[in-house]
Length: 125
Image (cartoon, rainbow, N blue to C red):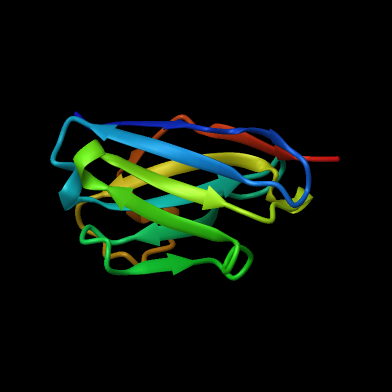
């Protein structure tokens, strides 16, 4: 059984920063590729960023490239999403996902087997 738990969401003004964390338990974390997705009200879940099991490969959506950074700490079984220069359109529930069999460049939600419950990020003045 794999458990995925996100934290770090909250409310911030435009231009501000937040760091999300995702802890994975139940299996060997270092074997998993990890990703962040988000879903705004009335919209489909969309890819944000991913990182390979090795940490060497990362991939970002065009909408967050240059503002968000994904990183992993295998010693802590944790993947992070540092979000800078936040915009109102970044408001969404952010989900962490894990899978053994995808590489670090996979953006399709259906390819990830394990998901957390999500954490709300609100960007508003």
